[in-house]
Image (tube, rainbow, N blue to C red; front, top):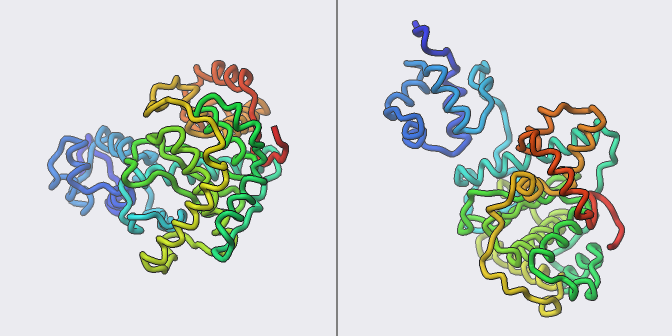
Length: 343
């Protein structure tokens, strides 16, 4: 019989939550300051954790507390069924940090679709297509034309930060959600694309310098174009050999290098400066993208969601929303999600 200080959680769900998050039992035990034998006993149903321990588990594994009381583990598709094949990443063996980043981006995309449906906002279509038989220069030119960035405008960009913000806004305007993720090492992944339609997603590692972010963004969009042309499948279904896949990667990289017309833009001497020290509202925009932030605020203003919902969607305390609105109004959006105009 469990004591009054313990909770009766489902041991199968507890084990599922840990394994699905990518953490070994030893790491969970260290976080909860218990022996690994205790964690194993919980997962085997021989013992029950306390309320404090379950709360800490929920925080560490980024799961709602209620999930541990479900009658059976949730049935979710493998994460590798969501993202494109990545160099050096074996499906099912992603780091816990990358697994969390992918889960969070998938949740954000689902929230965006739900808010659009609630608001009656049309969902934009990503219409760019590429094939491996296309010349990389042609693919790059097609992407550049869709993004609508004149060389004259590029020459006016003062810093790589301005270049990154503009390329990101342009990509968002052709029906792509662009998110940033943290805590994932650059050695594991610089960028990732989630192969969904509509509203495919590109995720960029926050550790990248701005110039690297711009190239990685365009590189991932080329992969979305190839997926739209049925030349790529999610990582779980991708059957090419390593050498064959490297050829796909090279083609995408070359095409991406043509899109911004390298050598034409000014290069700012910013070194390795990064944006980790942004304010909470800036972090919300960096992480979620301006179109998603704007969508959440519009839904809040229309009373379609509560302030609690809005704070959860943006991972931002409501006390910062005033400053967030001010930031959105101070710097006009170059392009909004699904817009087709040029600046």
